[in-house]
Image (cartoon, rainbow, N blue to C red; front, side, top):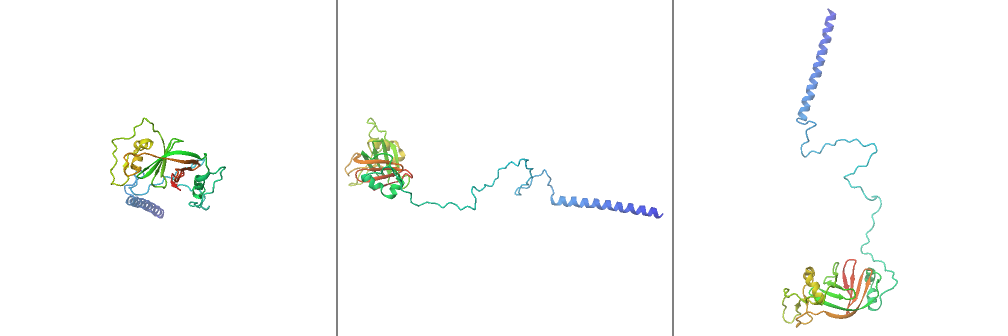
Length: 259
């Protein structure tokens, strides 16, 4: 009798333990459903939440992987170079130096340091020039170039264009009518000759320079003004004397000045 009661007690405790474990599993399942209802491994995250990061196994050779973060190109401990803007350029050491009037202009420190050394001999120049509302054109026949100097002397203030004028070219375009001016003032005219050909064929130049300016109030046709001067090429530009002033044409920033 005592043995039967002991066996019945063991069976009762085992049944109670099974029921407790089953109840605990049901509670965990229910809580999981409440917290992550509708979310399974195949269900994407709601929009706005950060994506899950799936760990990847590194290859045996540890091949470098491109990073979205740009790596520094220099050691941050090292000091950065100090800008040298505004510091004077060193004087050039030249085998030969310009002479006479061009030499006087070249000896100006700003001119000398930016133009550098001469690359050609100084030449006498029989040139022509024509003035416009917003600049001037200068013909350099020794190299068949036309220098166009705009009224601004800042960077991009001048350019050089090939002189392609032929005697058979038309002298003017009747469809381009110049504006009238007040009596007693210099007239605005259509340019002629090499300057006129370049002006008519280049719409941007035509709009930037404007019309040619007559030599006197009674001018009815524009004519280039001839001059006897000198010219010399340098590493960083050109010096051109028109008999009255010396033009300094720089190529480092395409600015110009005159002395």
